[in-house]
Length: 98
Image (cartoon, rainbow, N blue to C red; front, top):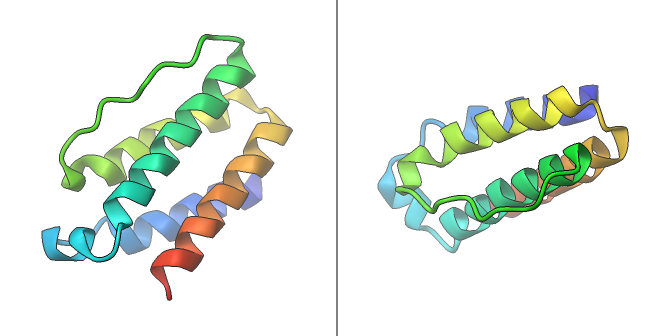
């Protein structure tokens, strides 16, 4: 659980200050939205709920979506889901840091 929480905090410290031009670089917004959807799917699976598509809002909303879905996933306490989510977050961080 701690690895995921730490990874999320590090990611959010990077992306919450981005302005629109930074979101437009490469496919950062697309990849961040993919993480949002992955967190939602992992949370649904951990809770035994059906998966649902997360609405694609403006890029500037993405950090808020990450935070909410990360908190939801943390609340499940599912270690396998949290480990998989930590890997997904770290993969995104590695991509945006290149």
